[in-house]
Image 1 (tube, helix red, strand yellow):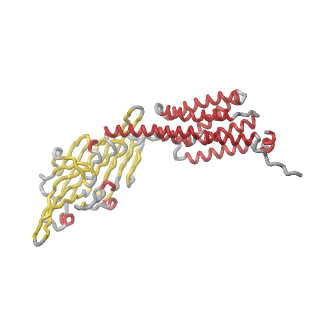
Image 2 (cartoon, rainbow, N blue to C red):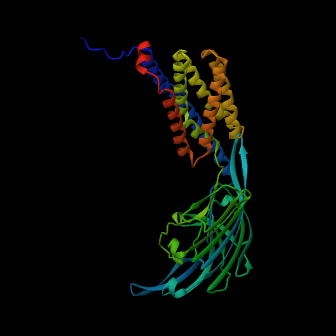
Image 3 (cartoon, one colour):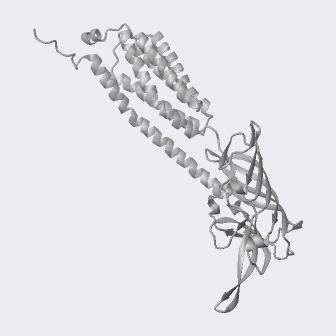
Length: 434
């Protein structure tokens, strides 16, 4: 008895499955194009953001005032007594920084970008301990005060600059210290004293981020803003915070053991102040349109797989053969959804863009299926299934924290339904009948 030949590869079911898989991979080409288009539009958004930041002010940080103290030391050099002059920077003993940040959206073309204006007040004291800070100094004198600010173009104005109760708004000039940009306040007319108090009030504009360099023995930072979606950054999270639709407030406390600088910055040493710990916030637009589009595209393969699986089952149950070209048309319709979503979401809020894009594609596929499936009811039923599918995808896209869990449950439910519906199908018989 001759052996029973293996199931023919040329039967219609096997070929149909192979063709469907090939079409799925073929449709990834336009999906890759859509992804690259999202990246391109996002880069244009970044360029627009940079243009706004160039004119308004970019990422900002402000640091604790540093007191510049000159001192002299005498050393024997070749039997001669030589006097050397050095400069150390003394950090505040205590520092209180209050920030009132008013944020708003600015537009360039179709792109929006968050910017802010912050009213900042700094109060603190600096105590000088000559023996500890300057060693065997013969003489020392207070020279100036340095206030670190990252982008000086964002400094709108200085409302008050009091040192030991004396206003010094006119004794300022721009400068830098160890990579930190900022401005100096001349204190040469100040009488020699071992304790200095300062009260500084200024207005600073910027975008995206505002940080504080807590370079003091004890730094307390208080921020309040009308922005309702902050992201707290830096090396220290706030001890207290309150976020609502009206804005947020946050408080930090940092001591000298946290930042490791001590109380004095000695001459000749590099402290890498630009890399020191910071506290602050980042203002961002939640669910950025291009980020949400990117997340949507990631589910493209899943949507196509579920769609083609559904139409394959429809062939089995309705006894209606679909041509690969018809699968391809349905697949291209799914790709068009992402183009519509991207273009509409640049002009409408994402929820409306998703709804309109889904309705456009669902109506197109539903009308198409009324003909190819041979029944108006089947076409309408297909439309209902697509409403459920796109509703599921919408929930996945909007639920960042639970998207993995909900996606896994959704696939489990779909697979369970397929297994239940196909439990009585004799696939060998289907293959045999072609």
